[in-house]
Amino acid sequence: MDLLDILGITEEKVESITILPGYNKLGEKENFETFTINAGEIISIVGPTGSGKSRLLGDIEWGAQADTPTKRTVLVNGKPMDSKKRFSPSSKLVAQLSQNMNFVMDLSVEEFINLHAESRLVENREEIVEKIFNKANELAGEKFKMSTPITSLSGGQSRALMIADTAILSSSPIVLIDEIENAGIDRKKALDLLVGHDKIVLMATHDPILALMGDKRIIIQNGGISKVMEISQDEKDILGELQKLDFVFQDMRNKLRYGEKLELIDM
Ligand SMILES: Nc1ncnc2c1ncn2[C@@H]1O[C@H](COP(=O)(O)OP(=O)(O)OP(=O)(O)O)[C@@H](O)[C@H]1O
Ligand SMILES: [Mg+2]
Image (cartoon, rainbow, N blue to C red; front, top):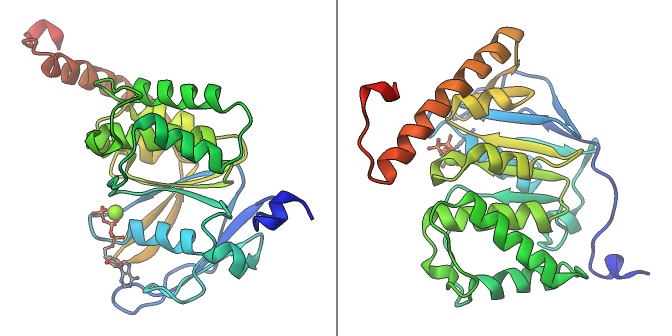
C-alpha cells in the first residue's frame, strides 16, 4: 500500500463527468437526457442572477446523487462518485474557486502557501511557494508581500492568491470556477493559468467574453438547465471583436484607476 492509498487518494483518471437531469425550481424535469463533459473541455454556465449557476457547480463538487435541491445526479467516468471521494476533502477530485470566500486564519501569505504546499507533499517547496506568490501578484492589481496577513488581503487579492494556489498546487482533474470576473483581476490571465491540459473546467459567468471562451455553454433558467449550446463560427468571430473592445475598456479602466483624465482621442 503506498502513501496515496493511505491518504485515500486514488489515481483513477477522470475521462468524463455526466449530468443526469433533475428538477428546476418550478418542479419541472430538466429538458435533456444526459450531458457528458469530456477531459479537455471548457464549459461556461450562463443565466440570470439567482438562476442556479452556483448550485450546478455545487452539485458537481458534491457528486450529487439526487440528494441536493435540484435532485440531479452527477457521474464520474459513468459511475457515481465513490463515497470516499465524495466526503473526503483530501481526495482532490475537484478544485473549486467559489464566489464568496473569506480567510479566517491568522497566517501570513507565506505561511498559508507553505502549509498548503506541505499538505500536498511537494518536494521543491520553497520554489513552489515563490512561484505561487509571484503569479498571484501578477493577477492582482496592488502588490502584497509574503508577510501580509491573509486576513488583510482585499477581495481581489484573496481571489488572485486562491487562483494561483489552485492552478499551481492542485492536481485536481475537475476545476470549478464561480465568477472569476468580479474580483477586478486579469480574468484572461487567470483562466489561462487554471485551464490545464486535459482538465474538465466548468465556469459560471456573467461575462460574454468568458462565456464565449468555453467549447460549449449551459443555459440555466429557474434553477434548471434549459439548453446546452455549442459556440458557432459567428460567435468565435464576435469573440474576437469583443476582445478588441475589452482592450479599450481595460485601458480606460486603468487610466481612471491611476488618476488620469480621459480625453476624446482615447476613443
Ligand atoms: N433546481 C433548483 N431547485 C431548488 N432550488 C434551487 C434550484 N436551483 C437553484 N436553487 C436555489 O436557488 C438559489 C440561487 O441559486 P444560485 O446561487 O445557484 O444562483 P446563481 O445563478 O449562481 O446566481 P448569481 O449569478 O447571483 O451568482 C440558491 O439558494 C439555490 O440553492
Ligand atoms: Mg452564483
